Structures are given as structure tokens and as C-alpha cells.
Length: 287
Length: 322
Image (cartoon, helix red, strand yellow):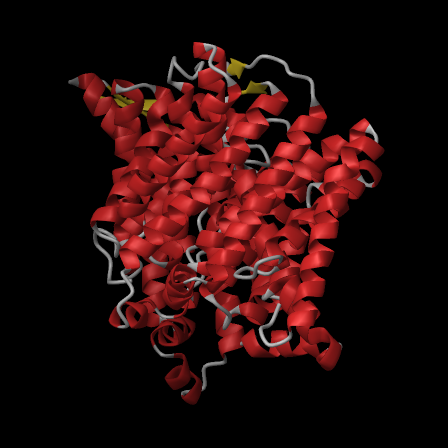
């Protein structure tokens, strides 16, 4: 029973991070109708930004997160403004394909600059943990979980109440009407993609503190983010949290009861089953 | 090959037959490296042509074709390495595995559209490595070793024959009721259904046809390379290559994917020997540039750039930008 409780807690902590990973993907997908296959590569870049700020400039990894977010925001803004805005009215397959091309370029640039070595972000307090009634909670994972949930709530408030957030929602609902009300679509689209990239950057920094990083982690992380967005739907950030927690718990349980090599089989098995049974997502709107 | 000009059409057929004859003669004139490169280029062209059927004609961007390739490779490897059966029996097994799997999978996932279909097949491609790694019959993680034949010219001719067969099939497809039905599905699926196209049947058949050529290419590859493992043949990067080659050449055209595969194979081979650091990024750069400036591929470019000139590229950007 204690073991099961421990597994569920680990799954929940992992799930918070997964939710943050998927949040940026779901935002870009919902507003721009682009499934950003380079999302995982942006997570990877966020992890490297945090890693180099920590090892090179001795910035605490959690203090480095806003810097990583800012860097990724700039990168995302430029990618949307310079490349994706050029093809966004083309067929859906073209935007899917072009983000895949960006993924390949970013992955190999990372390999060129950072080498293919495995790296990990290990601050002094990396090993500390707290124990509550037989269940161990590692400090770093708990902090990551809190940041992930906090950012999701902040994102929700931003979309609901800020002027820019309302502009983003307007552009997602009806671009023509939004334009008539003074929304500049080029700017709003670039801002949205930049926000998605910034969320990926923070998620990457947190990922680097709990797991090893290398230039190739992007692909599977994109696919996992997609699974979560499918489960949670695109309407509301809290759907993504539910999807993230669900996937985190399922993966932890599978690793324990079936075997660690089947972890990814479980998550993508869920993807295929959910899509076949409910193509619009478990909690989502119709496609 | 437009109708109404028989002389021109005949000239094109003769030119194409001459190109095929020249390619077939290559093992007797060229060196071993060239034959090796030829086998890989011909197999990639076959994969691009196979993808063209489901992705180009039916408009369903499959990221799962690498699964059929892996199944084909394992079909031949299991028959030859585990049961000591001859190569042609292995090819039959490869064909059966690929087509049967495509039929079952197609019934389930071809109901999905656009992004959903693409990512669902992508997810499947990602788990196949893990599943096959856990099968003792397939040699698990370690893979299987096949008997060595050491006759590169034979594999070259086999690959060329398969490519010609695939291309003739697509040529027939483009003119048949079946192919027109697929194009109708791509352009407007509801409309096609209303006009009496059995969309489910057509899509599943297209998926199976696509899988057949892909699995046979995988089978030839397995016997040629003599050693396969799960990560090597269920490689998503291969699926990406076939998509890029088909899209670069011109999806939904008969010769475009073959042309795209040859051009990109040559360029990436040259880059790999001269500037290795750019070579790995090459396919990414091709995707970005091709989608922005020539989203309908080489075959459309060749047909239209003469009248439009540089305006062709500008017009493409103008048509799709925000």
C-alpha cells in the first residue's frame, strides 16, 4: 500500500511537469491551429539554456528559469514571425511538415553546439527530500510541480483577463472579427507562439533537474505533449493538467507493474486508443 | 503525358524506357560504391512512391509507413534466419505482414483526419521499436543476422524492378476509377462520399497498397544489409525522409516522388562527404525552404516556372502567408 502511494505521488509530480510541457503545445494548437512538432526541441533548448546558466554562470536552476523563458520567447517570436506566418494559410499538412523541419534543424544545431553527451542539472540540494508517512517527496520535483501548476493558473488568468490574452482568444475564435476590433494578427500570432515556446523553455529547465538531457529528447516529448493535449482538450488549461496527471500516474504504474521498457508503449497506446475511440479528445471539443 | 498528343506521349515513354535501361545497366559500368548508393536511392524512391499513394493521392499524411518497412524487413529476416526458408518465401511473408497490418490498422485509424491521423501513426511508429524489442521470435533487442549473399548487382536490379513496378502502379492509379476516388477523398471527403465513393474501402485499400511496396522494400533491404535490429528498421527518420522526398518532388504526381528521391539522395550524399555538419540538418532545411517556396513540389515547379519565372516563388508565399 505504501509502495502504491509512493508510485501515485511520483506519478502526480511527474504529471505536473508533463502538464507544463503540454500547455505550450495546446496553446499554439488551439490558437494558431498548428500542431508544433518542434515543441519538444524547444523544451530541449530550454533545458540546455538552464544547464549552461547553471554550470557556466552559476545561476541557481530555478532562478535561471525566467531567463530561459525569455530566451525561448524571443526564439519562438522570431520563428513565427519569420517562417510560420509565411505558410499559416496553407494546407494543414504543410504547417505540420514545416514545424518538423524546424525540429530537425534545432536538434542538429544542438548536437553541433552542445555535443551528444548526456548532461544533468545537479544543484547542491538535488538529493534532498521530505518524507510524509512513508511517502518520499524529492524537493526538486515538488518545486517543479508547484511551478508547473502555478504557471498553468497564471496562464489561465492571463488569457481570461489581460488585454493581450483577450486578443489571443479573439484571434482563436474568429480572426476576421478580431481584426476588425484592432487585433494585429501577425503580432498576436507571434506572441502566442512565443508564449508557447517560453512555457516549453520553463518545462525544459525543470525537466533538466529531474532527468538527463541530450539533443534528441525532443521527439518523444513532443509526442507526449500531444497525448496530453488530446486527453485534456484545447479549451482550458486545466484540462491539460488533468491530462498531464493522468499520463504521469499511468506511466509510473506501468513502469512498476509491467516493466520500465513499456512506459512509452503505455502512453502511446493510450494515444491510439483515445484517438480511435474519441477522435476529439476525452475532455475536448470536436475537431 | 497529356492526352491528345500521341507523338509527344510516345516520345516520353521511349525516353523513360531509355532511362530505366540505362539505370539497369549501371552495375556493369559503375564501381561498387555507385551501386551501393544506387540501391539506397532506389529503395528510398520506392518508399517515397509508396507514401505517395496514401499521402499524395488520398491526402492522408502517414507517419506509420516506417512500420510497414520494419515489418517487411522482419518478415524476410524471420523466414531466413529463424526458419532457413528461401528469400522469395520471406518476401511473401513480408508482403503478407505489411498488407495485413495496414488493413487492420487502416480500419482503426483512417477514420481520423489531418493532425490526428498524422500523430496517431507517429505514436504507433514510436512504440513499434519497444514492442519488437520484446519479441523473442524477432531476436529481441539484439536483432537478427541473415545469410550473406554478397551480390550487390542482384539487389540493385531487384530494387530497380520494385521501383518500376511501384511507379507503373501509380501511373495506373492516376487514371483509374480507384485513383480518382482517392483524389476526390483528398479534395473533399464528404463530397466524395456523397458522389458514391466508398471512402472507408478506398482509404484502406490505398493504405494496403502503400504498405505492400514499403514492406517489399524493407524485405530487400534486410537481405541486402544482412543484419537488422528494431531501432534500425523501425526508424522514424526513414518515414520523414520518404515524406520529404515525396513532398519535394510533388505529392500526387506519378514521377515527382521518384525525382525528389533521386535529387535529394544525390545532394545529401555529396553533403555527407564534403560538409558533414550541414548534412544532418539538410533534410530540415529542405523541408522549410520547400514548404515556403514550392509547396507543390518539383513537378509543379517544372510545369509552371517557365511562364511565371521568379514570380512563381513569390506567388506561393503570397498565397499562404498571413
